[in-house]
Image (cartoon, rainbow, N blue to C red; front, top):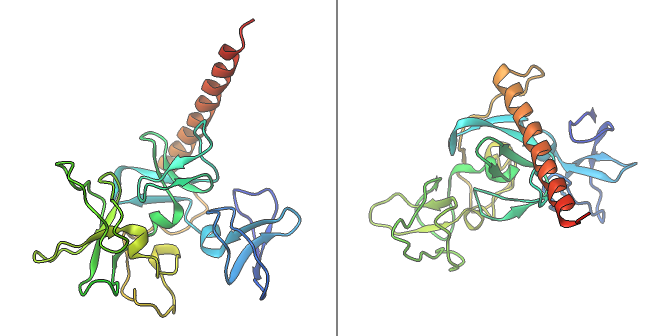
Length: 236
């Protein structure tokens, strides 16, 4: 199967990874497993779910504008901080250039609910800030401090005080579109999508075209600022 992806100049082929082969996805910088989209001439590889991720999505964590999938960060640093998990990234991201909100691809598709063997009840994904009183909170799985700025999974039962990092709650969920864990048999077996993604389409809506143009303008502005800083650093 041949596939043309917007992030690469050449046509990609869908290939099955053979035992002993090791590849890294250019979309998320994580090791590839099972099937990949590959450009063998360029050593360019994408997870199947990174390669087929929707170009535009509406997400409940940010209802003001749609997100646009971009192949690399538009910031001068060449990286971004995910507003979902708080971890940095320097590859694919879903971006709202107007609000400077960025998400890893796998964070954008986190399931709305998961089950984990560390807790007896189902856990719900929360986009809201926690600890408004700046009290320290610790993940009930890894016991490390949690940031109030990032998403978390929590138990909504009133008798429970159970909140965990998103990556701790989903460390046994196979990453894929809409949180689909396929036939993977794990202790996290109940997963539902955080939202209903828009279907793939070749025609962009006017709003999507506008967001893509804003992203391009944002990138050009960042590059102009960087060039201005370089020029100012070297006096004539």
